[in-house]
Image (cartoon, rainbow, N blue to C red; front, side):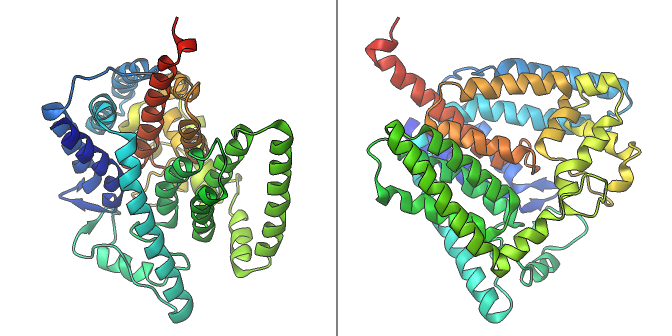
Length: 410
């Protein structure tokens, strides 16, 4: 029974991100899946191991203080949302994480990654030969985006310049691939094998062709940390890194002369911190900091909860920078606005405790997660859970292995 639980939970962890595009009666399918995992783990799982690596302090703070500040500030209209988001994530970490297995996650994850990449390649070939692509979205479900039907979104997606496989946007595909890239690359640390580089290289190529900034930045951060930590002599490491940089520069120059290179350079012009709020770079990177700067000192320090962030935006002098019905904040901005400097600091402690003395796989996942926090909004979603559960399980596994070594026993 325990093995069955571990298999089911591990499967759902890697499958749930595919459910993010859909909703029913106002509830997103991925939230329903996460709630099911929590309930199933509570009924069938072993005893909770506790909130590990500094997360206890963050969760206790996040459940109480920001929500009190939101109520006192008159920002309590979405209080239930704050409690549900942080409460569900806390329960997932407390009950689901300990009942998952990195072995089974990797086993199922590999299948879904190959399927995602295969569909993406087919879509790209079809678009570049026929001028349109098939959609891999399920047409008879409601889309989670407001103001548009699934049928209209699919019609729009078929003629977009970039493919999205089973997801709503190319960046969502990148979010899904990056943790597996970390697993694939991090497994090749000793007795290096060129054969083992084939998979991570292919995944990196797919991330590049997605033309998603978060995918490229995440892949670069993973490869950079890997090159710094790969187990080889100092001389070989210098030679390996130097060769990688030279090859990287050569490929970069070649790619920049292609249509994809021109598209990527065009996207960099969207990085505008001066408030041109129709540009993607402003929306993803800068806009939320304007909102944070307009909050009063108490709110900036203590936060107003995830639900309160909606009220903060709606009452901000920078509301004009947001489109109707839209409240996009990247992860860093959500931490600052939702939990303030105190909550952000507490989560940072949890992050560094996870990172410190973790295996290379865990550290690669966490560095990709951090790099994407400055670019994307996937706060407390199934995609964030995918990053964090891999880091969590890698840390548990690494700690157990260290305890088995005589030198680690005190």
